[in-house]
Image (cartoon, rainbow over the protein chains, first blue to last red):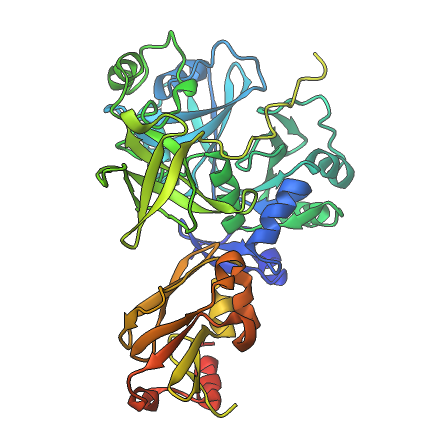
Length: 363
Length: 124
């Protein structure tokens, strides 16, 4: 199994390790998933996400390239701005979801899912024009620091002041790449650091009183509360971004990207099924694969993720339902081991994100 | 306690006359992690040895609990549905269900405390 440059740090912390996308990763540490989840929501959680792929693309054609492989308009955003987007396939499905940062007119930094790394790199290579060079960073770790005290911890532990940096921006700080974003719905950062400095950086952050290590299990429950999709579960090669309720990533006047032939009609004419948030009304836990049924006990969809929300203390999830039933508040049932549990359609974001309030403080 | 018995699936049971009180062991709880929900059997349900009659849900996964004995569910620990972490309190507060056994023969294949402890050691 592959390991990250922080593997020894995890085992020294007594992490329960498990396989994820071919890597031996920390699932949780001593205090358990619930405590780690709550710590991230109230202080700052430190995550090793080095299994994810880091890709740098440079060259005069780089803006056009990213506007071809994603439905996002990168020509109109300022340098430093990061965008969440998708790589559509020609049929309008999703090859992967990713975050692309425009560092400059000729330089883009991208973070891709661990499980999709090889596929994405082959995909991007296959569409790479002559005026773009792609460099896959295989000698760097990625450390996420997430939570309301993340900015303070970053300043006090690493001396990096981000007071003027809004959410969804990235910048170079020495040999680090610091991006203000994440997968938890909290304010926070992802820090790309050379492998040989990863453990020292991790330990410095961990030495801050606001910071505790958090494993991938809590990362999943944190993102589930936000309604963020997990690739391979909530989105895949067969789901269009419109079905996935990711319309907001699609630039309105952008028509010539891969997959536009399917995605544009989906945007204009609507879709038969949609990704929705789900909240259980009755007791129980519904997970991926649970059928969604209407009052007549007819199947109207399926859950693609689900679990217990530590914040709401109830079971939540997401899934795809027939668009007729996609309205928030619609009463549904989720079938768990043969029993129908009363539930309702909820906003995708079941817990309000604390990221959007981040304002740019200075020009 | 001499009447405590254990299964390879990490259930414990304590037999009082023809009533078996059933719960899950510390080993099972540690493996599951934070517990968030227990799906309990209905009173009066007839269960067969080896059938799953309850489900313990943790943050990570759902684990079925199998009854080691055949009989009728005559007691259910309703407190667990509000506070699944009670499971960790063992016999007094953490039991799942009581089953009135049809036959005591099924006890023969179960492990006693020493055998179970030895079994757990082999799991590493």
